[in-house]
Image 1 (cartoon, rainbow, N blue to C red):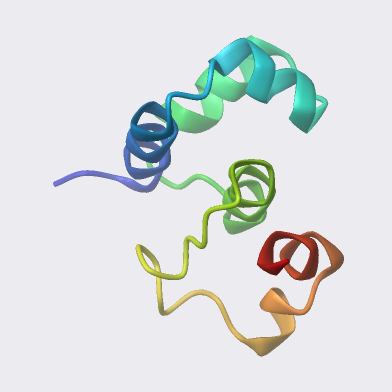
Image 2 (cartoon, one colour):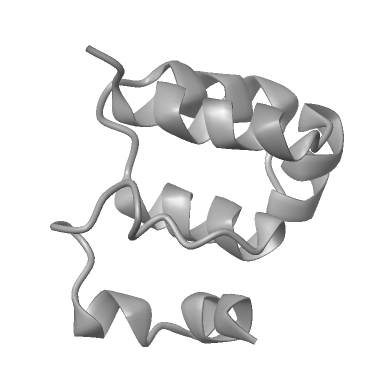
Length: 81
């Protein structure tokens, strides 16, 4: 079964977004980005940040963990624009 980090990594690849550039936009090192993508239990906050940069709504892949409170955070509001 594909885990959270792998699902996020697949979306990044499909979008053709370079990992180094993504890491820079997230304000993290490339190693930290890889660690998050390899983590089967990547934090949902990480996915929200990646989604904001990629303009991708991860609620399609992970509908249950996101609630109204989570989606009203500034990064999600910005991603919805």
